Image (cartoon, rainbow, N blue to C red):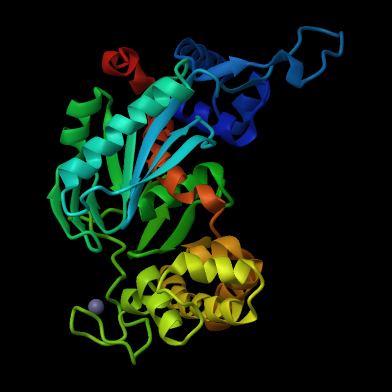
Length: 386
Ligand SMILES: [Zn+2]
């Protein structure tokens, strides 16, 4: 029943609104099994009937379509970046309903950063969407994250070590808490709600202040026994002229991370402060020099992604990076570089589907991935008792 419910909810996510008869065909399940799964999912407030979606033809029994109910539940999310947390409330289709950025008070104190974020997120829920029941809280961050234990093992740019995020925030909020790397969370989000919908395998490369990758095959991201899979930060796929803090030359992160690239652009005189958002804003405002500078980063990212692509041979490659996210010219530069340097054709090289909401979606997707994998688990009284 649990497996059937997951298959049915996933099919409604992809195809809804959809009639139960069509759902049975899409899922390869018997009509009776689909009816049972739909009843259980409707009881939980995850599915809703939408009679208005298909006009009644007046002959025989109408096939009332079902769809994901986005009006009852939300998931809460916290994304931890180098300078700020993104707080969010996301609907069950991954739509960002509320988003707020708050700067870190004391960045080297994870307890303070996380409890402040959680308190403000609960206040935001009470203020903006009090009628929506939060299913749980997702926390996403860059670097090495262990989802099984709910721990940020190492956040490279903030210097956090072995931060027990799940235990801390479960106690603070009373919500079920899940923690994952933003590279893996966004890879699943692309499969569930984004351009990689319906694709079996995908490689995701996240380029921010931390550079990391995620490999998804089937319905799950590969973790590795230490949950450290996808650490590409110090692979020698960057500029050999750059020396990394780790002592090696040509590390990918030391070449293309937001901070590294902004510093490079600042030294080259393209921007007057070493801030990546200044560079993107200048490019968006029409500066040819800033655009060319960001396109150069997109090409460097593309060269690294090409190597990873040929190594893994996934169906699609998704790159989350500020320039390609905001500027079509950067997305084109990335696509052309990967296509030129690998077996990938240009149409399987995708920029992030989530635009300016990308960090919020990452946090929400940590919980939504779990929901779509096992929707009946929200029967758990903890989830209902909020
Ligand atoms: Zn390095």
